[in-house]
Image (tube, rainbow, N blue to C red; front, side, top):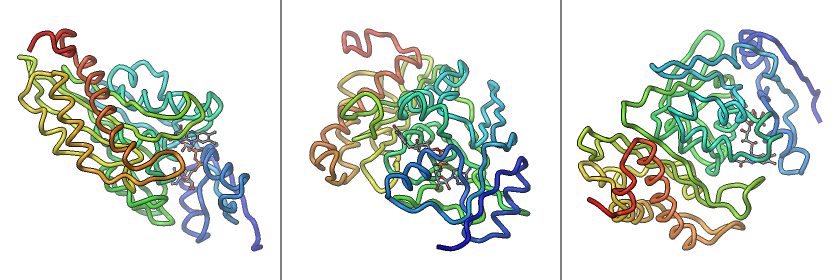
Length: 298
Ligand SMILES: Cc1cc2nc3c(=O)[nH]c(=O)nc-3n(C[C@H](O)[C@H](O)[C@H](O)COP(=O)(O)OP(=O)(O)OC[C@H]3O[C@@H](n4cnc5c(N)ncnc54)[C@H](O)[C@@H]3O)c2cc1C
């Protein structure tokens, strides 16, 4: 075993300096993935760790009607309860509220969730439909990229070893917009998604769908957007039959795998169900009349 090092600096520049100077150093935020994985013997703890929990710059949050910038160390507990996030970027709040237990949510962070690269991460699909961008920083440089470009595959991201995820930016949604995230799991808490679906919908003044986005969790190597399914809704009034058709298109767009949690066929069938549910809630939140959503009036 090599020499073990652990640092807990208080400034971002110190963190970036350590990542640059000590190759092989891994950041640790809440530790609910990294430390828990080591404890259960899934993968050893890296020899060199830099802790992020004392760095105020990574906990900084700026939320206005013009958008939200969330530091990478923002916890799920905060995302689940902040009134502005719940109201304006509801899908993200829905997802954060489902993560683990109250203890996991109080400790686990948005940055850690995105950087673990799991196809079952709960914040990934909400951020995809909300058109989020992420900011990566290294000593002497920074870059922003759409969140979809961060995800490269299971446990893989586009970040280089010396790059830190410092924050996530959420653009504002137009008026008459709503979003939602729903998840299928074997039990209500302390469970990983079998399938998850996020939707964002904007309605025109005549009540038709003016913009829509759908993304899926745990059915592909990364969280993925399914654009054809979302495009089908454009120009239509919200209606259960249209949502069911979008669900069927979403199902056809992915090739889920079978694993310990579920078989591929069951996962596929559940994609269609969850997409329709996510669209129903997102459209309700956008302000569509209840009758249209239950199919009683066109
Ligand atoms: C009991 C339990 C239940 C869970 N339930 C869920 C669930 O329902 N849904 C879900 O999605 N997840 C779940 N998780 C996984 C985990 O809690 C989340 O992924 C959490 O958001 C991880 O955040 P963290 O700060 O603890 O990450 P850490 O463990 O600190 O880090 C995770 C990874 O990200 C890297 N990292 C962390 N921060 C940064 C950064 N700013 N820049 C670059 N790299 C970084 C680390 O090096 C590490 O590779 C669960 C975990 C446990 C233990």
